[in-house]
Length: 375
Image (tube, rainbow, N blue to C red):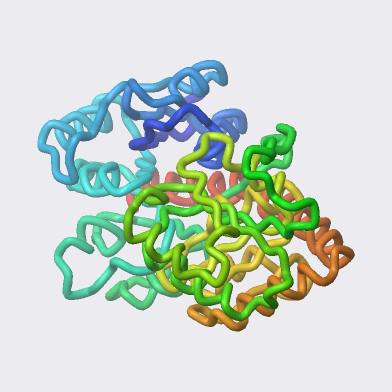
């Protein structure tokens, strides 16, 4: 181990549900930092995490520790001791429990703290809880997943808005090579436009907007919606679906480990979020499979999708605009194919693993230099 290598500890709180794809952007980033020869990375995570074996196979040391609460004295002490005993220079915190405990653990220690910020909303200057997150004075950088998220965080920061920066999550087309899922059990018509929505179906993810949009579609348009994610069995969700113009065209698939492959078997992916969006993994996965996307203009998804080139960006909470975008894609298979090719290109050329690694390495080097110079 070189004395000049930066010693970094990443604290995460992932468990996973059998499919490692949802977590690869973070894992690939940390593995790339280790492979650069400039950083020694250790990952602290639950010993139950699906990623422990994944990291081990790629030369990343792991420390098993499960954080059981937003404020855990046990975890604060554990993280603090590890930083102090191992000369950690960069503490990189992902997810709420890691962030709140890690920020407190770092108080008074010579370590630079980076926290991850994945969405707009939930930060207020007058809310004390926000100071256990991105507004904490102990956070040296807040790495935002999109420019829209960075703008939001900057408005909430008091004296130093420049500590909020944007680094896009990096994806690789190599992760999306599985064949499309078999949709035959849903007996969809051969001419159906198959539209996928992957989300925790909370109201802000736009299901009410989608249901209203069905009333704006031409009755003869065979548009079928496949909804995947949490809450599909919620009675309120099912009651809402029953109000659609053609409820039989909305299919509730529940949670799917193979959601990316189901999306690959569809023609379009959508996410009509009404507020507090980040950079949707499901949209990235759909685009990686060459599927055009229709998203609302809230959060970072408008940065993912080039409007009129790789899909459509529609106003949030506008069912008519959502329906118009879907109708346009239904009427023009050639447009769908062209948009899909451009969507895949954007993931391949812009939202890459390499850019994420390079920008994080630059950040690590900058912060480590400040630390070593006594800053």
